[in-house]
Image 1 (tube, rainbow, N blue to C red):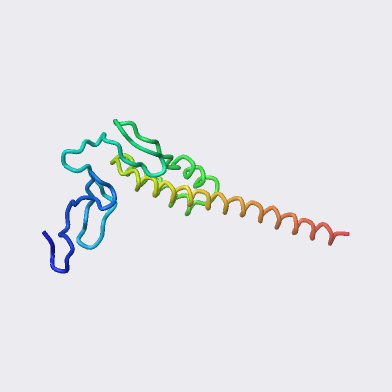
Image 2 (image 1 turned 135 degrees about the horizontal axis):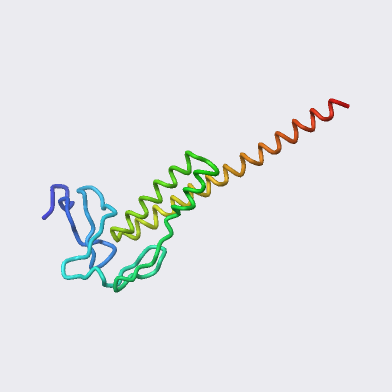
Length: 144
């Protein structure tokens, strides 16, 4: 069944890239939501992004970067650390629903924001030390 313009109506349709899997079509674009096709077991082998294959209920674990993002938030850069925590939570939720491709993508974003947060925290400490040394040196030299 096709709508005017040649595109299928919104709903679950065979995934154009993964045989044996359904993907949600919203009427204009494919979403990240997937499900096994009718007659297919969720335990059949499928590709898990960044982690190889998933089969028989055994799944590759994806590091969501949650503890790292919490630590970065507390010690380095609060705003970016919070963003990293949000992406980590989204990665965990995607893993819980079996959407490993989305989980890997969100985990990568969490990793990026965590590392940027740490980098900015280190940069702030280095700049602080440089400023203190420069001011200390200039005050120390003016006394002579």
